Image (cartoon, rainbow, N blue to C red; front, side, top):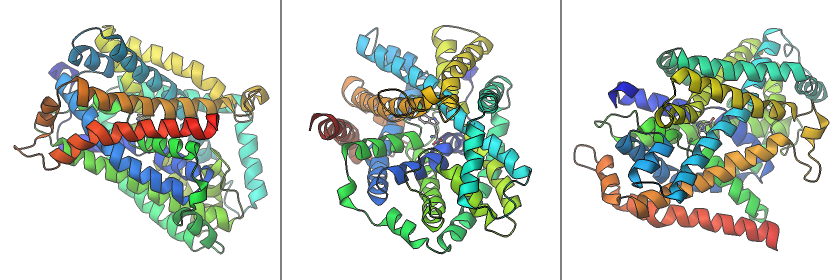
Length: 454
Ligand code: TRP
């Protein structure tokens, strides 16, 4: 295992794990998903899923990864003792999800780079009307060459981080930069909630309207919980494989969960009150933060510097996440196919480029991809739901079943013990055997029933 490398200390893993978890999922995806899916009810279901499914599954992934020292495919092969087709398929789903999520996630990270340049140019220096800000965004995403270039830049940068041996450097850097990002979000949240008319947004965010619960809302809240914690596709299995035996899995995982959930909730306080104050629409979709954040900056003293700082830090946060997503397919090719690392990175980059390019063009640059015939959704939204929410839920379901019913739960508990103790052993056993898989199953059935059968 030493030849594959490992984290140097507990703080090393918490950093890498939190670096993976905290990213665009919290700051870009959580606010717009909350806006699209009914506000406070979505937040409540999200929180419940984080702690009833997310945290238990994170413990499962980390201990499976550490015990086997492998990527998801290799882990299932080793611990399921042999070529059981079901577990092969689940491992394959993990690697596939990694490829597709990496592809579309990088599109948004590319937008952030574009917005960093816009801010640097001083585009948002004067107070702009929402209509002008909308135009700036529309013109930006409609420029095919630019969005393709920015997307390629992000996958290229991620590939460089994975092969260039600078991964540790990026993680150490984020140790100093992420608290700064958090601090900036706090300032932004204060500006946002004190805007005239913010109250309606705060109410939308905090007072649940139970009539908004539908199957899709519940499914997406569960998907978002897994997404924001980097679960359901083997990131934490792969990261666990680099974890040393000395480390305390339950406490490290709790820190990672708290960081990711905390940043998500904070990002909601930045975006949703401002949406209401600026007269925008909660259901704007993936464009939301790119329309709201520049407006907030244009309404605050020193907005230029805050703006530059924000987009810069968000790029770093996104890169520590893209690295962790790309790591899964790369580890698969290196461990299972015995490929040299460089070749694996090259192939994954190429696939991500092929899948990501239509996603990048599906926000206005190509009208066909923006409004797919028959489903009136963009290519981007389709792959984000399929390989963001649904595949992660299926992955988490089978990972829970695997550790609880197929592998040996007492071996898993051994992995969790730290200096002889695992305080929440009973609760975790109960969750991973019954609570987590049953909730996932019930949510799937509810969604099917309420959206397709009734
Ligand atoms: N959690 C990250 C974010 O919120 C994205 C991410 C990294 C991810 N690794 C993952 C999402 C694995 C799903 C699965 O930005």
